[in-house]
Image (cartoon, rainbow, N blue to C red; front, side, top):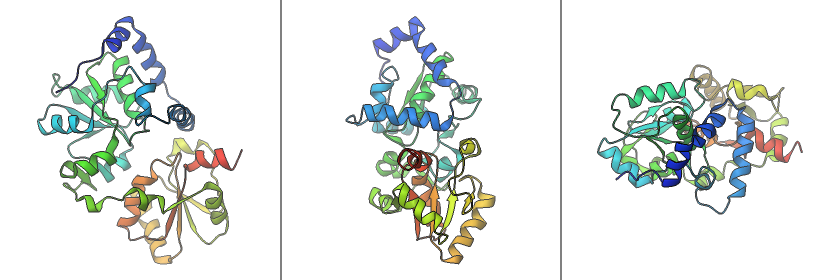
Length: 291
């Protein structure tokens, strides 16, 4: 069922080249810089359904249904490498969580794998253009753990095709009708310039959900915005209740426009209907407005 490691991958590993590559990517890279590298690489392979497969050609991947079969047979350790907030919102039922940002990433994944060393570990992240799963495999290989794979279709394809083994807000199974489709998501996107115009008007609540280390960059709307990390439920709950009660529309942005697709589930759960996201997040604003 599990496909063998390619001869090229084996040869690179034997030569020590994969370890060097993994060590390079395992180094701490600022979130915005990493996002820029990913965006540039994805643009260069825009015609590919899975651009990461051409960029990380030495990383072995699993198809969606292949992982589903392994999951059903308890023949794999599945690890979600997204943020804790994303994992808690929508995940493969039974998956473990180790964020790619965790400084002890390799050690924590190795501890999971030690529960049954004969089984491979499969990583997943956000979708076709998300490279975190590939980077997870790189890190494991750099540390000498080569029984690692990436399911690069991502969580949204998984949820749509395998709702019976998908959890939303900790509850499984889900119904496909509960999923937010692409058109529903696109209806709430604004170009960065239009988002900024509305944010400065004072007629909207503005929420920055970037994590602290992502906020090394300046806030975009200092006098108008509230900064609450998406995973900070203690602060987020009363803020969203205030937004709902006020009737004022809400504007939300993140670092690269990736987390907002999951954050939409939180807004819908809180009964907030009038909301908009900034397309591309902080990086989108930087690329289209600040240039």
